[in-house]
Length: 224
Image 1: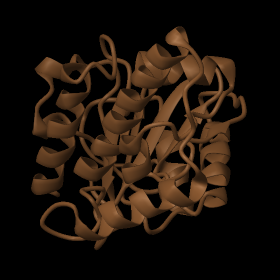
Image 2: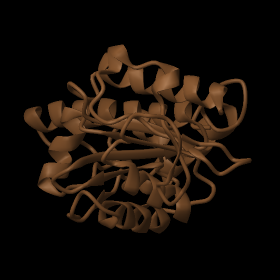
Image 3: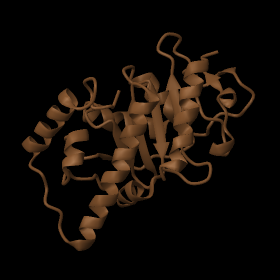
Image 4: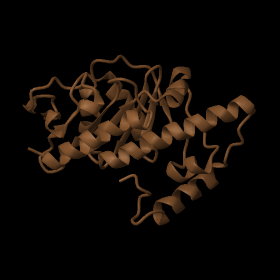
């Protein structure tokens, strides 16, 4: 069942530690099949290097296991809430990438001070409020913030927690998570040296519009 999606979700999960976005078994990627509405999720507590496509559980949007023997990720309720309430989204990634999470620990959004940030998102990377983990509360807050920015920035920092990135496909959500961490690292280094110079909002939006219309082989700048 959903073999291609399982391979894609497994591949994206394996990239998280390779790209420095998670440690040990934390973090996860899930992907929804648009036709059936079923979701491939990460198995709980399995080392990324040991994970195989056939290990990926399949659940419905209510969290009922349709296929698989492994327990599902403890973050599944959050991801499923996001997928249920953002129908244009089909992939959710959660990371604890250190530089982005340091902004989350401060409850701060990340301002647009780099052209890379303007290209990718065009607006500050928002930070949601604190929400209890283990249920749907994190998902509710993430959806609130993502709707507030109309998904122009396909990622949100969650206060005292980490990063949630979304996309039409796992690869696009993964790119968003990577860019968030890359931007956060450079902004952190800049703040050590002084006060970063903000890019005016209209210029940040222009950068975003150009990138998403001209970069790469198709529109979207790779955030599909």
